[in-house]
Amino acid sequence: MADPEHAEGERLDCSAQAHLDIALTDGRLNRGLVPITGLLEYTDALALEAQIKAGAHALLVDHPELDLDTRRAMAAGQLGGDAAAPREVVIYAHHQPDEAHGIVTVEGGHVPYATIDQLVEWCTTRGTKVSIRPVLDLSEEITVDRYAPTARQREQAILLTPTCVFPHCSKDARGCDLDHITAYSQGGKTTSWNLAPLCRFHHRVKTFSTWTYRRTSRTSFIWTSPKGRVHPVDLTDVTDEHRRRTR
Image (cartoon, rainbow, N blue to C red):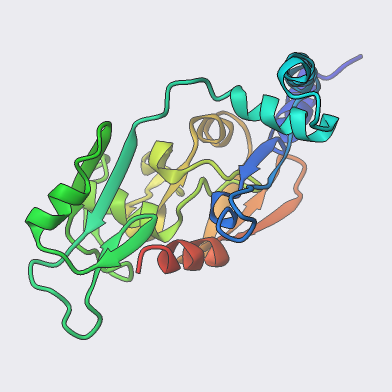
């Protein structure tokens, strides 16, 4: 007789392996070409393949000189639609310039030091949302005596671990929930060490299944699956790359 709990555990364990990585930072190394890798559920992969196949076939009319692989790549790019996503620029700036380095920190890149007026002019491209925030000390242990994390705690967690901390998940931390690693109801404090970003799906997996995890450093974690398998997660390289892009 089938065990529903075992079957659900198998499903969650399998779903946890699904991921999609778009290496945007590699674009500058490949003359604008960006690698995409991932694992999809079979039905989703079938639907995606059908759309790419149809798109590649349609492109043959206007681009008979292109080979199939090139047309498939173009068809995949067209799935993004014609409307560009709104651009958000987050600036971590001191009130005074850093005379030693002459740099204003911008999430996702860096620019030479500029006055506020110059930054506003630089960021007034249509559709751009600009946020200017104070620099945070990532080593500071911020603690509050309540369940809901503060905005500073959330920002610190995002800068420490820029993606969901579940194994193999690369979803941007800005779209994630901020999870109490040890549940607040079980005595977990709302403190920097006990907070980490989880995407909504993996937050539910952690809450409603027997997946557990603990933090071993600011940027590393150890997860244990319902079957007892151990999955170490080390986001040091991800965080270092994020910092390099924001210096």
